[in-house]
Length: 373
Image 1 (spheres, rainbow, N blue to C red):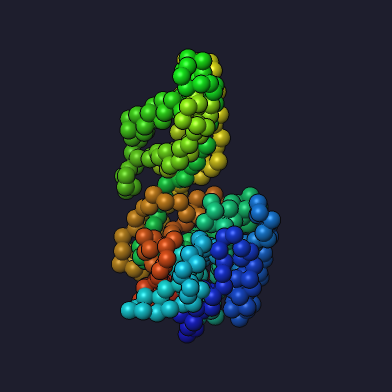
Image 2: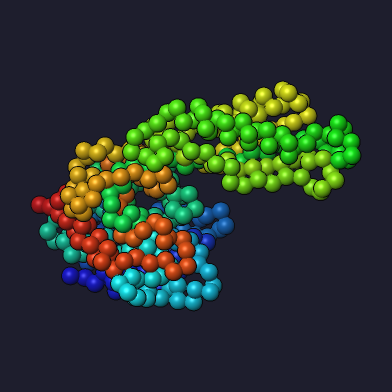
């Protein structure tokens, strides 16, 4: 069998921080997977900063793949104080390194699984490696726009502690600006304080989030309703100037199947209401992200397989994944992988060695189960 730890060491050594090109990592993956005699296709694009990126699709066999193993190649930045971030280091049964947990461990396990069992397979399968997941699933959205990456089933790598995740909430962002009228703070009636206007909007949105937004629930999620958060807030120019503008960032995570505009429509309505009460207020709302969730049925064959293979019941998560994009491409998606999401995105990120080895075994069995002769 191929050595999954050695491969993970090779992958961690390549700095694939989202601000960099992921092409060097794709070069490594194509070399490693050469024995598959696969059709490799790169969907290239240039990001907003002018950096060349690509999604890599590795297709084995003819026709629609029965199963695709999907992993994102990009990682979050690491602190300069973590001097061995790109050197896989083993301590106490844990493998440390940037991306070791999120999600190069899954990528290594997927590659090794395919290399180990491909000669036993008679049905088509695919390996899909995406770019810019950490920046908003941008690579997966590029696949969806082009209609690339279609498959019957998809196992999508994320650190889930080897628990199959059959659903996740959506992820949405909006930037809200309240423009008022500046003036001398000693004469408040000469202006319209945008800070106050923004505060009124936020109070109304908080009431909406604790009332109407909780009326729709979906069992299996924690919490079982759509959540809303004001994460960033700024406004004003000086302590003795009536605030002329204020901005806040609104984030919400809608339930699968719920209209992603549920919060956007409400903030637009409240903005109009605010402007009617004080015509000097202008409210501008910009939707920065409107990502849906996905919800794979509990009895889907790929869910049942992963439950049986791991001995763990399928669950749901509130954070976003590439599941919605794969679902939109026609797949039955499940998120699964070694490592714990709570240790991702931090100095000292690690994946348990035992989970890495177990993940490779589960993915071998998955390929044989769905793509065997």
